[in-house]
Length: 111
Image (tube, rainbow, N blue to C red):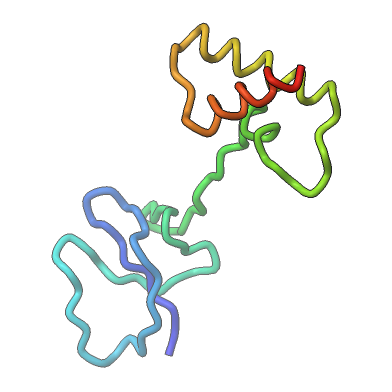
């Protein structure tokens, strides 16, 4: 038994990684091919024809980082920065998520 990647033949995207013996009958879904998985094979990654490329995880923006409600209480400076960033985003795009809008309103009530 080994790991095999299901690859979208049109895009090279790794759709899934399965455990298969590589010999027994396996009905490969249309539009996919099966390739023995290397260490970088993972759903969301790609196959470039010779090797697997891991998915690139984007770094979170500052609003996302400050929106996280962790165990440690935010400092007054972090709260003020978040409030300023949310105001700027609302002004520039006119669009905040429900969570962002509620956080902004809560921070405004605190100040």
